[in-house]
Length: 333
Image (cartoon, rainbow, N blue to C red; front, side):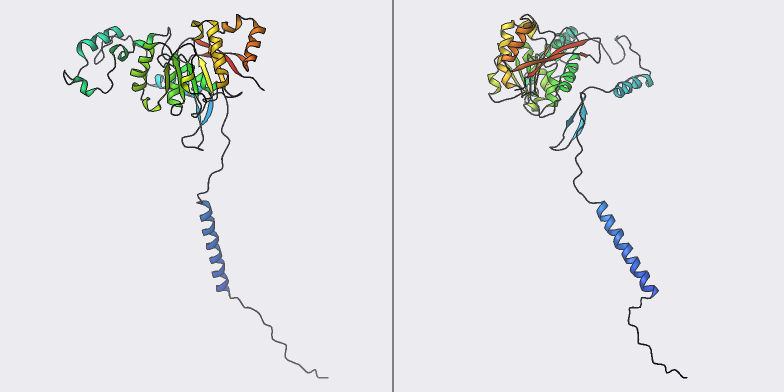
């Protein structure tokens, strides 16, 4: 039996040759590579990481919104580094005697030299005053005022580090010092804080002269425009009615004031302290408080909206000395 055969229906489809497939895959690979390269170079804003916190570090921005951690006090690594630099250079402390190119002088001798010789090179009268924009008294130039405190001038840095760390200061903070003297501590705050954010009330005229005529110009801090006011009796009105401080401190000043005047100061400053976060620090002792008796002192502070936090000690970096500080803040409502 013969079977009749009929033609099979034709199948329609797309026929892809091997060369075409290779070219398509290559093009796709190139496109993906270019896309990934573009994404990797995207100038997107970086994610903001939380600023580190702690007693020894603060977040400080060079520009608004830019965070970088800055320590006020040196780390142990810093101290080991400086010790290592002294060791590797083979440096030993030597007597400060006359030697080639170095002629040691006391401050009194230096002042006499300045009066007699006016320096190695100088202008003669009548044109001498035409070349000095801010003539400074010789006593200030030889830094006699650096010996006014009964301890090394370097102790000012110790005070700054402790207070700045304890108060978690940033450059936008506002600071008031009661009795800034010749700016032994103040220069460090002025350098760190923003324009006009350091305020001081000082009564001693010679100290103020040293601050204005020598320390601020010689430290390159005139542009910071600190608000330094000559005054006494805890009169703070010249600083403005609306100013609020992150830190108010008095270093050894209350030791020389009658208790009644100290309490006048606390009363006037209580509402100038940033609520709860702001701090008042008083050094050495708080006999103005303890002489009232513990309960009475607490009642007096409470009536002003203040509370006592505690006592702190802080060691000096460079010499055998420690500071005692007493901390206050606004009480919680």
